[in-house]
Image (cartoon, rainbow over all chains, first blue to last red):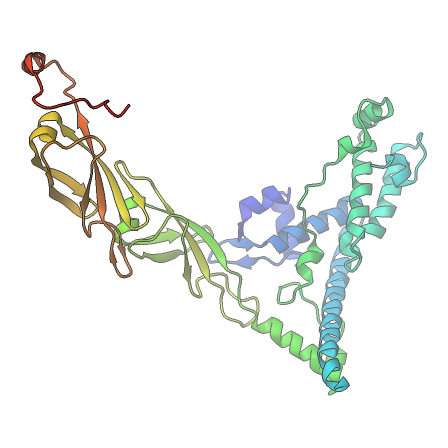
Length: 96
Length: 299
């Protein structure tokens, strides 16, 4: 788990920007009693958001759309991978 | 490393705006997170990022154009940077989206069944294991103790240190790790023990080692001397004519382990007086050993 202070430093963010990103649900960190607790995944996602905003010119409005579509795509890829794996498992028994 | 202008597909005389726009165009196409299935995207993205890094900075660009630095001089991508796609590939995280295939999952065919099963798996995934390091006093490691860790994210963790725990050993506290992202069980807390050194004890397996300084008189005539063990002082019998380096064994005074306890091995160290002792000097000056006393006869 990464503390908020460490996260800000490693993601090169200021506190205000972070709170906007959390409010927009671009980042969904875990919460402990009175503080946020971030994961390595949150950090990778923050880097992606920065790449999209700073290097690719995706604006504030577009970012939510991009992230949403990306997450849909990952879910689909995972579903497809699970389906393929299951199909592989079935194949040997049907050939016997 | 290729020529950065070639990598970005711009002319040597390209303006800063042209470079910026060329980089953006390529970044949008090649960013690893926008190409989760393309293993080469990461390499290509790093190349254009490095190229952009070099020639978007006027000073670096001037030095590169002047031949002062080569194209690889700008490689700045951290070696182990992980992209979002590396995490998103696994399920059971808060960013998971299902609306893209929710309609497929409603049906009763094979695909719907597979989707439901993988969603169920993700929901039951346990939380992550959390790692901690716990410094422990030497004697607590030998005798066992209870310690409380204050966690960085708040809260505390009670750790029972078993007697005889070794430096570097890891204790697993079931269900004390991160909570599950779904409805699975929490992960475990893994506490690595770091044993702090002691002022005079050291440890070798189940044995405790101690260097015990003794006086010339105790060494020559024998004596009973107070000797520290990990559970308090005991009286140790020093035989007559003991020497520096002689090892005496206190049975069972070592670390308690399964199948009995180790020993404490006491290594004697004869100490000459540090202040002037005229009587001792006078005696030794007159002293004629009775036997063949030559400590260097083996040399």
